[in-house]
Image (tube, rainbow, N blue to C red; front, side):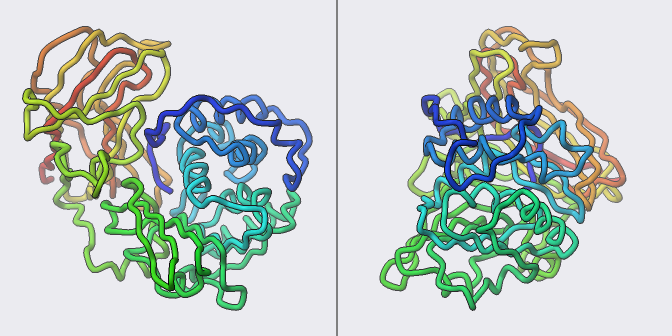
Length: 413
C-alpha cells in the first residue's frame, strides 16, 4: 500500500487493552527486542485509537515484528503508521491499514485464508496466529523469495508461500474461507470470486489508479454482496495489470477529485477520493464555501494526527509547478509538541519506483483564529516526480481547521 505520512482511517473507539501478544498461542515467540515498546505505542495510539477493537487482531499487531519485513534503512520507521518502500516499486502497508483490513475479514481459528500481496510478507505474518492456514501469493519474484525466507526464519509455520499472478488465485487449495488482497486490480478478479467459499469474506481495493475503494465482499447463495468501506490508494496488482487498465492516469494534467467534499460513498458519510482520514468529519452547513459541505479537522492532543489525503498523477518532465488553492477557516490553532507540528497543506512527490520522495508546504502553517479566507500556494515539481499525494492536516497541531474548495493546477515546463 502506498501512503504518505502517518495515515489512519477515522473510526473512533475506546482504547482496547489485550493480553501480551507474545503469550497468545500460535504467535511465534521472538527474543526481546528494542522495538517492543514501539509496537505497544503503535497499537495503543494508532490502531486501537483509530478504531480497531478486535482483541485478537490487536494482540497479533503487538506481536508481529514489522521491522523484520522492511529494509534495514527503514527499520527506524517500522512502527510509525506509514507505508514504507521495500524495493521493486512496491511498498509495505501501514500498520493501521493492515489491522483494519484484518478485522474486516473477521478471521477465525479454523479459517483457510488466501492472502495476495506485493512482496513484504507482513500481512501473512499478522494473519498467522489468527487462522488455521495462510496461503500467501506474492506478485514480485525477488520480494517474494525474501518474504518466504523471513516468514520461515521467524517461525510462521502455517504460512504457505508462492510467487505468481495474484489474479489467478490458488485453485488447488480452494475454496478459501477468507481472501485478502493488499494490491489493487481495476475490478475483482473472477478466479478469486470462484475460489471464495460460500459464506466467505473478501477484502480488496478496486478501481482506477487514483480512485480506488476498499470493498468487503461476502458470498451468499453463490452471489457476492458488496459493501464499500473507504476510499484507498494501493499499489497496482502487477505491472501488466497496471498497463491493461482501461483508464490510464495522465501526469501532464494533475488535478484533484471531489475538492468540495460533496460526493460521498453510497450510504455513508465518507467523502469519495479522499482517503485514510484521522479525526476528520464532514460538516453540512449553509456557510460552506462550495456546495453544502466542508471538511473539519480537530485535535486536542499535541502530536496526535488529524488529516486526510488524496493521490494524483503528476509528470515532472511536463509539469513545472503546482498551484494549490483552498478556502480555510480556523479556531484556536496552535503548534504541537515542536514548532514544525502546525496545521498546513502539504504535497509529497514520488518517483516511478516510489523510492525517492520530496515534500513541500503548499499552504500554512497556520495559527490562531480567522474566518474563511483563500489560501494559495505554489510548489515546484521535481523532474523525477511521477505521482504526488496532497495532505491536509493538523500535522500534530491543536485546534480546529476547516477546509473547502480544494484544487490543484499544473503549470507546464
